[in-house]
Image (cartoon, rainbow, N blue to C red):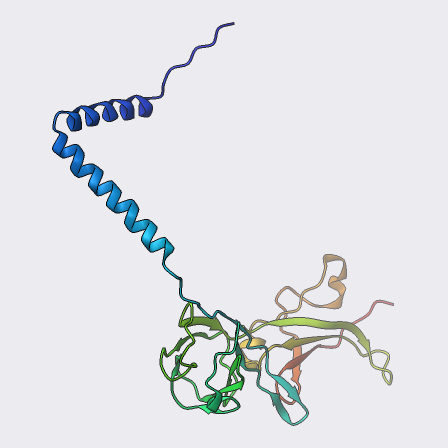
Length: 245
């Protein structure tokens, strides 16, 4: 066979432009000298800038907030948002001290910023976090951090936990005192206190085609719902179901 190569159009145009530019500069030495000065100055400025001592920046990472925990009395612990710095960043006099200025949370909610150590800053809200809230934190360049500390960035964003629900248990229940009383019982747990009305409007019971004898039709509303003390769990009870002999 035979090899054949043809220069692409962009290469041809670029070559032609280079030739015209060279002829243009060669026709007037003063232009060439000016261009040389500009190039040398640009390279020199870049070398000077690159060789300058670079400032030392402190970095940080954020974590949380996790879901609020409950006990038999109600809220047991509201989890904070934590800012962990790569090295000590807090003024010594502010360690283990609540902050009153120097940091801004938007949208604002009641709570306390607190230096737990020289490298860790936390915010704990007064009340529970809003569901799936978006927040922006802005750190002041003066007053909040030790005088020698410079950060690579002075703001960050985070979100609180979204609402979630999941069926954690389902069973076919038979009353031990009345064997003719049979029903389905399902347990749904929530990440946050649930709005009972909105939840129940989204619940329906349906059965497989081969179990239609149970009397449940698609989108059946034949059920009742009970809740735990803090509405973090729902217990769905179907109506009594007939069983074939």
